[in-house]
Length: 312
Image 1 (tube, one colour):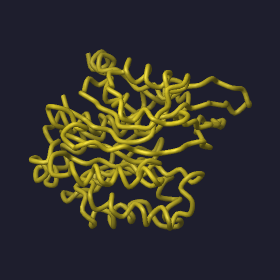
Image 2: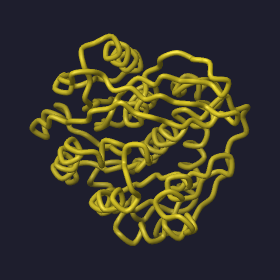
Image 3: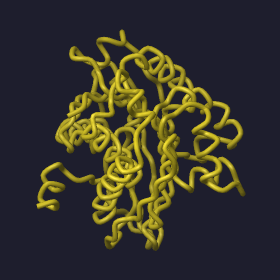
Image 4: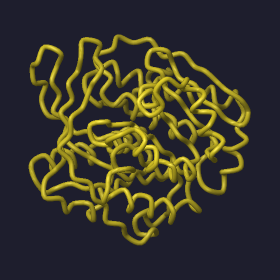
């Protein structure tokens, strides 16, 4: 199992169905969803985030703790816990509006990563580009790149990120630092309108990462690496909604890379030279984790025992 540090926003999703009916309040936030999914897959997970000591904050912390995540106390100084209003359409696809303040208080890298160190650091979405917290995120990655695999998911949120060109300018450093980038075709359509997703992925690969993974909803996922492209089909399930599906996919990627002994700074050369058969296994596992999440409401990723039962 991997030792993971996740840096980024945690919040409450207020989910509204296509019929306008309120489906309740649920813990969310892209990085927090990744942390919860990794915790449920039995990795050692620490989350550096920004929450308040209020009802919503306690809801989020309780959910993360129950999923096996340690929420670092340094991130509990917000005036109010962020809220995202998620409106789910008839296809189960969610669109978001946000009430969010993002800050990050960095500690010494050793203390933040934990006494045993860290194998993988994940960040992305709002936390990576929204000031003032984004500068703290970048500083943490610079401190830890020599110790851990870096994974990044842009997870575009136009309602908060502003113009695509501005977002891209803020993303440049992450494209250069990250070992693994996971991005959706919808993100790329917003960032690069009219450009084929795999053309963008190819240009990103040339900027430094070992893997660029593009998810395409029910059309599966593709990965580009130095060994060439690999495609896997989506796992067929009855979709309830897609809330948290991309985050579950990211956690599945990390989980599979850990199983293949490809995480950690010392294994960076092996990750860079990974073969296509291995990548096929990695993507197939991530697709399964995402599919299970899509089969139930909200960001509710599977537990390790569920995957084990399915394999049996």
